[in-house]
Structure formats: C-alpha cells, structure tokens
Length: 67
Image (cartoon, rainbow, N blue to C red; front, side, top):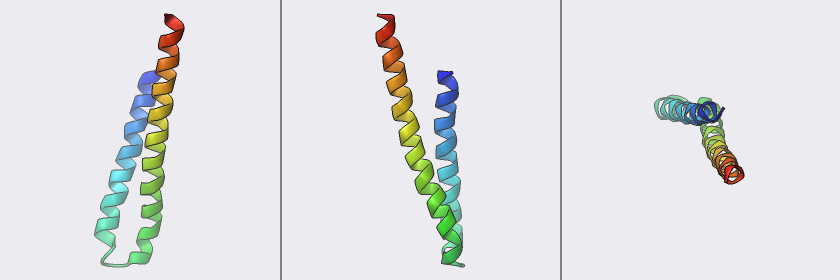
C-alpha cells in the first residue's frame, strides 16, 4: 500500500507540471483560460505535500509499532 501512496505523490507533481506548462503556453494568448490551470497547479502541489506528509507519518507509525 505504501508504494501506491508514493506513486500518487508523483502523479500530483505530474499534474502540476502539465498545468504549469499549459499556463506558460496559454498566458500570452488568453489569460482568462489559464485560471483553471492555475487552480489545478496549486491544488496538485498542495496535495503532493499533504500526501507526502501523511505517508511519512504512516511509515513512522508502522516503524514505531514494529519496535
């Protein structure tokens, strides 16, 4: 289960990277269209941080219970 959590962390980073790319390419054409991608980028980075912190806490709790 922990491996799945690691992969989802990087999936959020991939979504953020794609969103940032779309922001960079669309900003000069029509800035109004980029607001949704800004939202996706911010939420994806926040979810990456949240998931990473949650996984590390889960691993630490599992490690403490084994000792």
